Length: 165
Image (cartoon, rainbow, N blue to C red):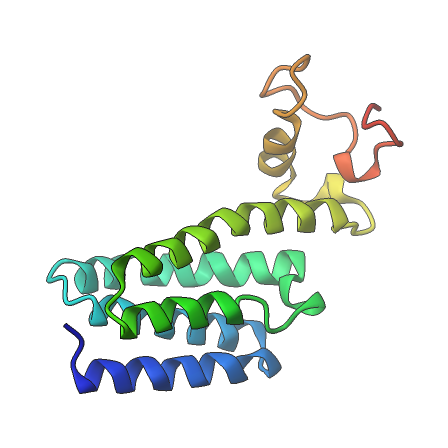
């Protein structure tokens, strides 16, 4: 059961999250993490706050890196507002099933969004990107005729139509 303090914290965190689209990437990530922390606290699970506190610093840096690397907020600085609204509404209503669905939807949409961003990402020469070996390896696993660890001759972003070098 959520307390009045939980509800006030969730409402405040959601309000700040909605306004965060205008801020910088690090600020945006901090606000998203604060909202998720408020959801964790409202769950009243004695293990979750400590667990979240342990991995939040790594999560923060990873999210900042992803947002900056792929420019994820350039197209839609308010991406995720609806999902966070749904999650908070479900938590406020004490509706665990709806909260689970909202979280699952977010978890399923994130990889698709990252894949789309990867294929739009076109710096001057991606082959010089220090992250290239990891990223290219993951993308190339989709090609059944190639070894999952085979180095790519060219970045998949710059392959001709049809996807072959």
